Length: 131
Image (tube, rainbow, N blue to C red; front, side, top):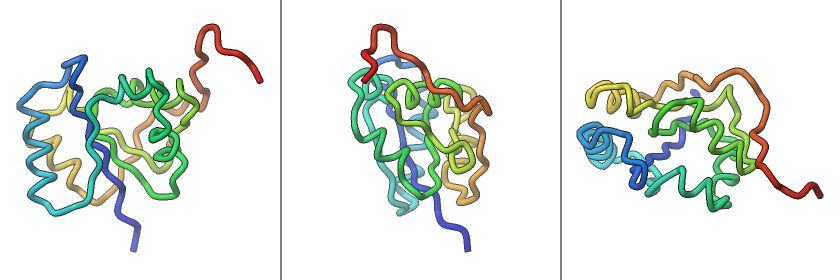
């Protein structure tokens, strides 16, 4: 039996680009489901701080579903802080484009449908020292 994906939910507190109705529906669905999940205030802010939690999530063996925004944006947020996500084990649920019902159903569905862009390169940060 395939392993259940870990779920990461982004509240998108700072950019506020995800519709409130969609975020509320997905969060409510997660809470009612009894499934374990991690919720963060804002992935963009975490990436800007290079939060080590992103590296731990990316380095994990478990498949992961990330409820946030565009798959390409999530990929580059993680890649920009050297936390490359495994494209074969990662699904990003785009709460910017899906309606509340579809986003909630996709997050709660135990089937993982990987959808990160295929390019495996990592974002380069301007002015970063090479060690």
